[in-house]
Length: 228
Image (cartoon, rainbow, N blue to C red; front, side):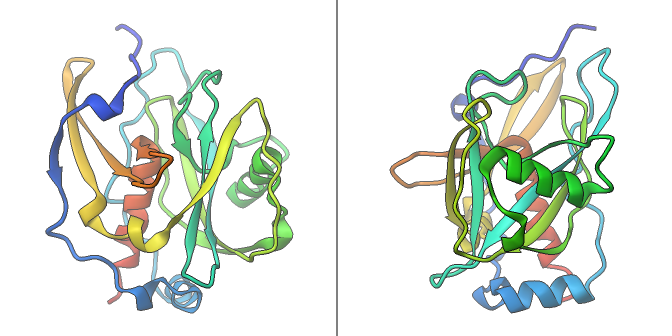
């Protein structure tokens, strides 16, 4: 079995479908109070997109966690994202959440997510209010990722780790929770058809949110539709 080849130019993969037929989440569901209430009341459901699983022969699955930082802003909650540097071994140049592999000293997924956010972007955990987790997402690079969703109080300052993080930016949660911005791409991959999502952010930066990050955001959308 040959090693999986990464998708180097996801923008070039044709869009087969846009999910504009699905409802956008109302603004009232996306306020800090509504998000707190949701995680206090609604059980975690199975993910809509569980991931592709390990496609790298010889790699043992490894636990990981990411922080999904929802920043409280006067104009509405924003999702804090990063762009990885081109020099990284896995997912180089991609849009991601701060996070990484679980260390032996981490007590749980939250410990990993908070530690990695401090190391990668300098986000002080004093600004972070944990809400809850999303289901584990399995990446093609053999990571079993727990997304830890949290509110982030403004007033923080970021300090990017230059070796790993090229940029950090915010996107409105309302934009990402509108399936009219969710694009489906299909590609032949290792002898099979694979589908991935993208959520292009149409500002001057042209950030292309896709792959695992887009899938976890779609799982966030799916979770927030529950219990309504």
